[in-house]
Amino acid sequence: MIGDNQIEYNLQIVKEKAMLNGISPQQILGNLTYCYRNIQFQIYMMKILAMVLRSHLLLMIRKNPDVMYRIESKYKQTKNPIST
Image (cartoon, rainbow, N blue to C red; front, side, top):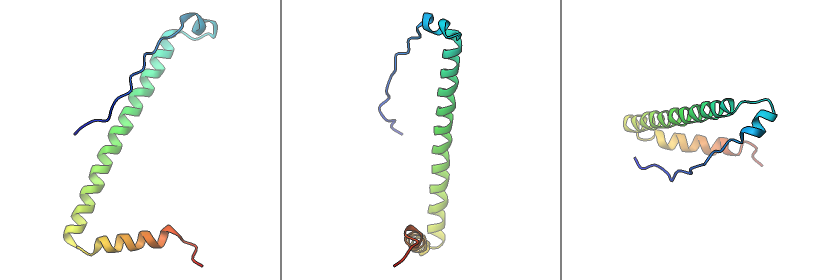
């Protein structure tokens, strides 16, 4: 699997400004690290979910080839629920 281009950020915490606002620089770094790890975990879980859904869809198509037609026709019906 090939990853997308990554954007690198150079985070520099200005200690004086943080301390003036009553926040320690370690709190800022800790919160950012926590948020980054949480986002990375959510992206990882979404990729797993996408792979599982894709495999289930392929399995449904193998078992019943006309299922793709039914999925598409149902999508077209719900795409524009207000008909004139």
